[in-house]
Image (cartoon, rainbow, N blue to C red; front, side, top):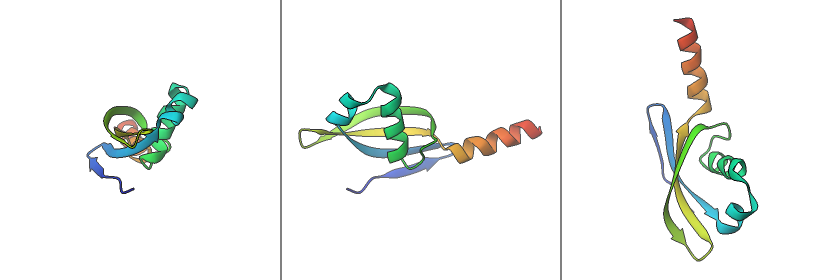
Length: 82
């Protein structure tokens, strides 16, 4: 399945697909990890998510956004130099 991805300034925004089974099987932190990994940055921070659709009966599409770990590290470095 093709996923949309948009990068706006500090944040990454991507549509990710998660099964209902994965939502049930994982705790909150596990689901956040799934979102981050599928959005392309396993170390993503400040994750926000919204369900945007359903595929078949067992898959849910979420719009996931968060701060890229590389960008957050860079911004922290710049902030510390000021």
